[in-house]
Length: 299
Image (cartoon, rainbow, N blue to C red; front, side):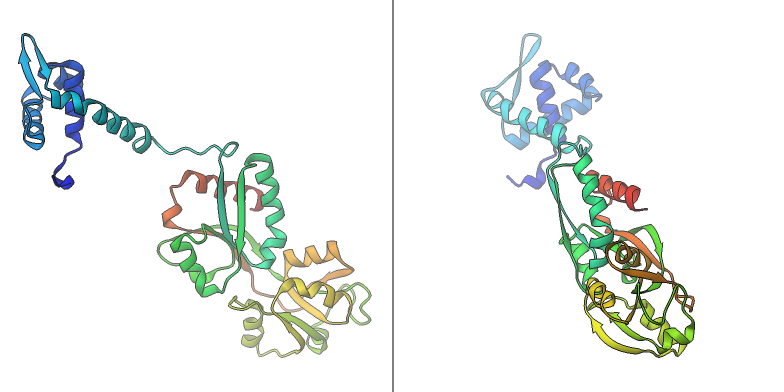
């Protein structure tokens, strides 16, 4: 028998007949007319090549074949009702699940501690894994499920099939060591352009400030170019180099090193930091909870 020929509604017809032993009462239980119930029963008999229910006095008694099928049919119906048709729920306090997040090293420094605090308080059995990957690979990771959520600046993901929720506006500022011999609490454009700079250019990431300078036709001397933003902290702290970084990272540097924050004398572009996910996770209750919770603590 080809399973494509099986109408699952016929299982409900069978279960109702087993319970009520009457075409009329089974039809009422299923909100069907008696002719519709009789027609469905006839289809069942043809499908299973057995009379299934035969009249005996005032009742329709099951055949041996029907009695044999009673348990399996009730089990299938219960699975459909309990496991398939019930709305999905998620209880963070008891759930065991792992999430993979896309975020650069800046995100790990600025966002991950607060997210982990949230999980420790509300979802102690949820585990996290973070991935950093080139910008062009982010879409594929979210589409395939290799990552469930991206946190950061991903302009390439502004396209159909992806949802995004804004977290913060981030801008660029400069950081220098506290005892810098030339730069104080303020900096002129001439000082900025004359200074020696340390620059972080993570592989495959959008280098917003570098593009901004090119568009303005502004040139500066780059003494060292790094692949990770976090490497800037000890370098700036122990030299006279200037680094231009997102504001939230600059605040981290100030709180963890002998660093001071100096506003850039050129109005820099603003970076929108978003939560981004693929449409496949839009309705998943666990994912909905995680997105909402992250937005609450980071937004």
